[in-house]
Length: 561
Image (cartoon, rainbow, N blue to C red; front, top):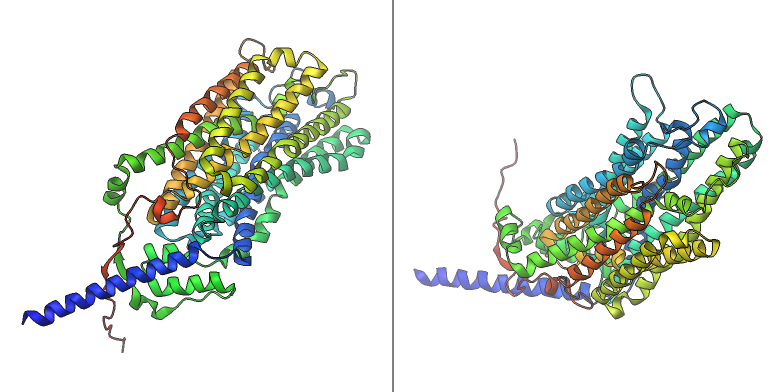
């Protein structure tokens, strides 16, 4: 009587062993796949989202100045004339802060929400939804207008918060998809290429702003005041509205990307469908099909539950990695967004975009200020931001993630300290201003050839598949929490010791940034080096018996009569 039972158990054990071997073979094929056009497609489709994200986030640096001319409440010379408008700004602690903090706050929510959904529902199932959210919110911003019943700027803040939720969703899902589809020897470069589109997006925001402002030069300098105000209103709406274009291009391709084989195997526990997905990757066949018979190959494996999550992260070797990725991103974004969203203020403070001739007509002052600020931001992007991303791309799989992050935080500590301590002296002469801009460009360069890129890559590699998107979302949300704090602190501190608009405390703010960069050096020690290692090795879990048994799926279901 016992022999058939033992025979069945032996057969089940043999099947489980065979399925574990099949899983290992599939992972080996993914980890050793040659670079193909499928990887290019992943980088392009994921990168298009980051292009859109950065464009939408950083376009506000110029738009906030224009909104100040049109709707600002800080007006030393009240009146509807262009002369008074040229001195008008958004209220620093209310209007300007609200406009700049809304998107990072929404991003924080989106990163947590979409990170969790990416592990629960799957990467493919929600990929593209975030771009739809961004497009709707961008149209909402471009089309919103003043009304008697509602405050215009509050409506704009609402739409920027909604847009932030969509942008936040892009971080964990794009990171995980590019990570899980990439082979070991190119994973760093694929993820770096995806994230480098942030630089192109930021550059495009400043370039298009410069072009649009230049296109309206005749209107600014020759039209009557009413038409100049109309032109200003059109300029900021065009700058914001163009953010829809790359999202519209990418959305179809996102909806057609297959589910990652790792999610199919480890979360859906569907070995046969994972085999089909791997064939798509290796054969470069663009046709993605779902095998409806694949349910017969479902297995039992580790499942994402609250208790399992607690058990996994209660181990110090796993918790310290989450702390390291989260705090490193937090420390970096304090400075990255503290500078990035306030670059126009900093350039104006050192005299780069100042209205030097107060006898100029108001319209000419406005045009010169916008032209100088867009040009200054363009220089910062070309000289520092974009090159930093691509130097990381070239070296990430040779140097490794941890050395680049450690080096970046170290150099940034020194740069911010020098900029802060010498701030007053540097801005007092034309040569000093040039030196400050050079240091600013170097800071931008080493943010991106450093922790800004690696804090995105590492969380997409070091956690198990069932928590990879969630943990990446937690890490990224920690960064945006730092961005929110940076905006609040920047607006409250920048005028300490002087009148409103004096930017008296800017040098000390740079010193505070240096402190956070120093703490980033310490948190980098908590993360492992991920270069040339498989995602399964990095997860700190044994893969020998990952599949634990078979699920009963061959159950006959009576058809309805």
